[in-house]
Amino acid sequence: MISAGRVALVGMICLVLAACSGGVSNISSAGGSMIYPIDAEAADRVMATAITQQFPGKAIAPVSLPNRGYSAEIMFVLDRHTITVTALPAKGRGSGGATVDGFAFDVSHHGTMPLSGSTAAQGLFDKVQALARQEAAPLPLVIGEGG
Image (cartoon, rainbow, N blue to C red):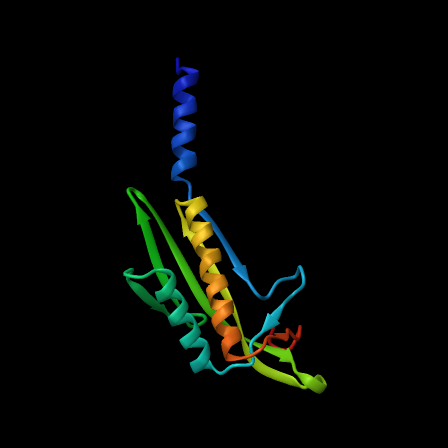
């Protein structure tokens, strides 16, 4: 017969080893969706600068499909978490109602560090937003035209 303690221990081990994932983006159905009217080179520069600042000394890997971006892995003992930032081509509404090409950013994460991984992903997203705002003011996303 299996004791309740063993069942609880196995349950806790499974919970700890279970992968956690999530993401933050400036394209959301909850409102506040925006894009930055910047070109691909500026979007790449924003992502590369943000991820190297957020994870100094960590190996940064490029991501190319389906959207360009960068990925970093953080580790602590047996836990590891992968955090990826990507630039999403999108269209925004400029002054006078004109449709403007640009990029939105998405930061996703997965791994076995639910608290620190999620916090690190949010920190990267905040850094990307700050750097993108230095390039250009955000514009509202145009739904149905590349958004």
